[in-house]
Amino acid sequence: MGVTGTTNDWATTTLETAVNWARANSLWPMPFGTACCGIEMMAAFMAKYDTARFGSEVMKFSPRQSDLLIVSGRISLKMMPVLQRIWEQMPEPKWCISMGACASSGGVFDTYTLIQGVDQFIPVDAYMPGCPPRPEAFLDALMMVQEKAKKGQAKSQEYVSADASSDPAKSVAYRTPDTHYRHGMDRSTPSREKSGG
Amino acid sequence: MITYKPENHLSLLAKVEAFAGDRLLGREEKSHYHQFKVRGQDAKSLIQFLRDEPGLGFEMFIDLTAVDYLRYPIAQPERFAVITTLLSPTLGIRVQVKAFVAEGDPRLPSLSDLYLGANWTEREVWDLYGIEFMGHPDLKRILMPDDYEGHPLRKDYPLRGRGERGNFPVYHATTQKPQGGV
Ligand code: SF4
Image 1: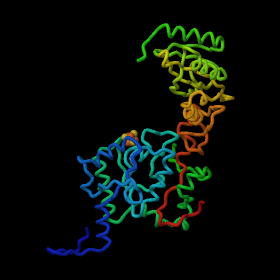
Image 2 (image 1 turned 45 degrees about the vertical axis):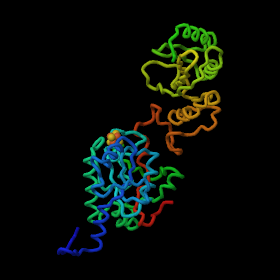
Image 3 (image 1 turned 30 degrees about the vertical axis):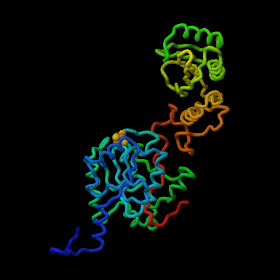
Image 4 (image 1 turned 135 degrees about the vertical axis):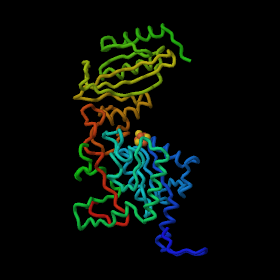
């Protein structure tokens, strides 16, 4: 906390710093556990590891009331539009943790149906290696997000500054996941597959 | 509890052989079930016989799946085989009916009027192998997205797909105005 002066009974700071401090210490997670990593995520929330110590014990399965998306598990072709829609529903500012090898890179499942890293399609703030990562790694990622939140940073905010209209290379056709879901994949846009895919 | 009775097996084999005759391409005895191999067009009548013949009573539908024998080292009558597994609570025996389906005309009569359970498994086989079940009430994809093209469990489908998994709109922050697109 950017405290600029203290005595026994008063402190001064900027409003922004105080708000960021409050946000960092009351992250409301939206768990998106689709596979085995979800079990480790649950362990991290339970009494032994206890994320309540970091002020983020309020698991919200309602994206509109949460600001930290935890993608823990495999995301398939059919699940990606759902994940994107959930991410869109979350209010700004928001953060995302990609938990485990599968969410971060597809893991061992290099097949037609699995998304090879959710960071290709939604902004990710912290990655966790491991298959599955231990709850300690989860706490580490949570603290990383807290550090970012204290500085007022979020990966999702970086997209705002990139002006797509001035740089067509950065511009990607924007469709809401809902439209995407109804009309299906647009095969005319170039594939964003990593090389070798 | 189902107990093993050798005479049940013998009567089953005798009845099936009398019914199918030379339509039976082959028969195998596995550790705990019998497998009858037939051509696609003969499969449904054999399954109906197994279900309705008095004394057989294969009333329980266990599973329906398929195999693609493309590049299989041992020669097979056709490229695809659709395998139906049934159980007879009366005899205490499981059977499999293996129906060979040609690559050029992958069609088979649907079993969904005999067994309700065949409805979803046939949709799965259609989705992943592209074998069409004639007479199915609602033959559409069940696992892959509705707009998916191709049947990914066929052996000639590329393992990593045809770029579908990399083809989604990238998320932009909601504070940004939508750019282009729909
Ligand atoms: S990274 Fe490992 S533990 Fe996590 S979802 Fe993938 S396979 Fe399961």
